[in-house]
Image (tube, rainbow, N blue to C red; front, side, top):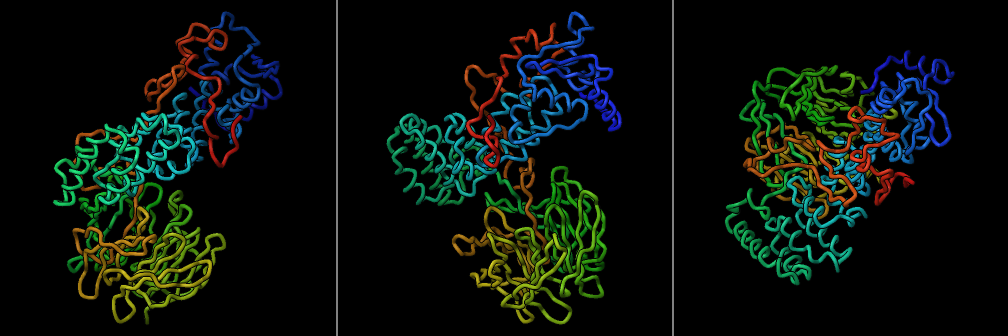
Length: 636
């Protein structure tokens, strides 16, 4: 229980404490005395409430508290009076330990938020281990998701990864939620882990190999890099795994499917971390409300039923803070300034503040937690105006107009700046492009593209801005070019497999996707993707509905991802929680039984006579294998 007081009450109470007025308790730590009020401390912490009420004499004035530094107690007492506490890289571990010891859950929560905001490749495993000692379910969930989402990077650069036990590594890599583009990365992580201590770890290869989705690997890679690997070749227990994998690979290559895709870990695709949404568009002679979602792990689309959906085409879409926004557009009759947002967890739609202008053929992008909508056609004229939406205030604000009127252009964000390219000004298709700096609220013209492009797709990919396809005034284009912001130059990129304009475009799983569009004769369902590393385009699974004027966005980290992918709902359990082994002196962790101090259950104040069943579970100081953050100083 923590007290909630007005700012004025907090200020007055703190002034009285600092002046030493009406204080009825002195807390002594290491010879340092802190005057305070029992009522204020009791409201902040059940520990103090029990300390002051269970002691033999409620008139006792001075309490000597062991096991905490004067610095930490000062921060806790100050928090009790002000509701604020300075958390730094240097004090967060000690402060979390002290706050947990004294049951000041407000500080525990703030420490967890601080640690969560500093998760990185190097420290995420250590922070997850830290939650074994304190009840921090939100921090634990964030750390576990971070490990799974960034597994490839964590396994490459984290020293903590190399210190995992075999059981811990197996538990991580068996998860469907493990986010890897290719299964090769999982096997290579296993090899890297074993190579850190081969004498003691080679024996675990069979157990770990059984967690790798071997049948999803390219057959050449499987034969040359796994079957022939010395760790596998020298371990007899791997033989049955290899035979099973070869059988499944044969089935998949010959028939395109396995009889046990969902039941067999060797063949079951991982769950995607991100989902590609294709929203609305023009299909069958009119606007559509259709939504399809794409699973990059299985290369499959799923049609998402939408009750009472409003048809819309030539609109923009964006993902921001857990919501999908659908912005502006045209339904065949009306031009919209309407903005709707979709909650993919609740599957509900909500109308938010409208734009200042009606915008069909609008260009949309996200910068710094704001949505930018630029140009378009309002039913009367092509626009050079632009505006910015703040979801926290639910308001649109006009920004500096662009240099040119642009409808049917496309925009993206790179390094905190907005790039908009091409479009139609009412007379001609445009090759010009410009960049907007949100800090200065200024647009600047950049080098023009080599081709005029209306109905173009523009997307930041790698460190460049790609301009894909479009209409040059004569024909639909297959050509692609990329802009280097450092040199202010465009260069040619291999052409798409299909000419198209007015398509959806997004980057997901390290690939640049283009979806649907118009090829000059008809709307199309074809989807293709470009990989920068290979400099090639590849066919992907086509949508179920042919449409142009479609808009795409990527939605990451859905806890209900199974509702957006075309897979059977098999019976295996799905969880992002990671179980870490503990030494014999540590208490087992669970979200129900993690150590939370409950002083009301104790006969005497725990600072003096701690109940062994409680306090032996909590170490005085937690020392992680690495600092809390690679960007933070090591904690002493």
